[in-house]
Length: 83
Image (cartoon, rainbow, N blue to C red; front, side):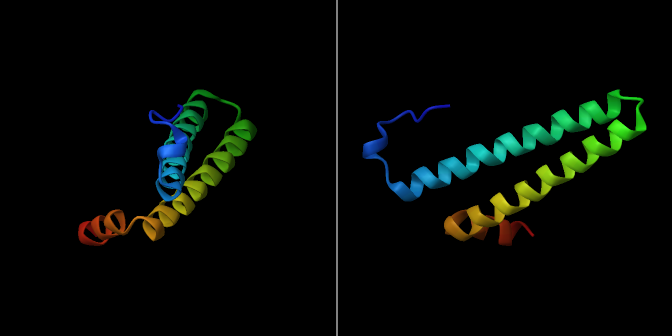
């Protein structure tokens, strides 16, 4: 999805946060896709490959969440208060 406002008017820090959040959404969507495929296949070898790929997406998700926490103090505070 493109930016709604002209990119040159946006704070570069906020642009990077939006990039990270978009990437996070994409990683979560990929996890769902892999889970559906794992559930649907009856080929155990394929199931293992897909599970491996899904778990890598989960790692990417964790990496993005940590990056967002380090770069958005308000979001980090919400995570800490929610824990």
